[in-house]
Image (cartoon, rainbow, N blue to C red):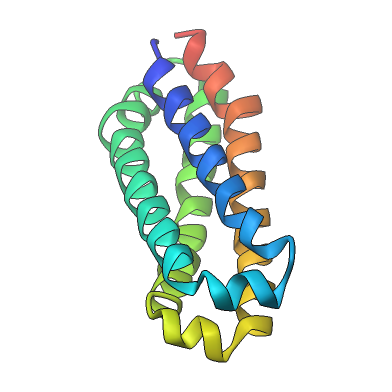
Length: 139
């Protein structure tokens, strides 16, 4: 199975995460001064994730769910179930921080929550790359 588009999306997501992380590197000063830019990056990341998840839901998962290999089917179901929680967590994060004034007024909370969501997204991408996508490439 050709997953080059999914891999490209992972690279795009990783690059955007790194951009958002750059605002955290100097902590409150950068976050409050660049709150509007940060909200735009979060919105762009949300869009990338939406496209990526749709591609997985419509192309990857259906193919893997019909595999003759039980391990592939079980792994796919685990990934599908796990993603629901992360997707919901990111949606809550995005809704909370879509207003730049909220970020300016709550920089410590924003930094903490952003570090947590970035960590969760990176772990998910790594796990997909190392487990799920390897299975998909074998089909």
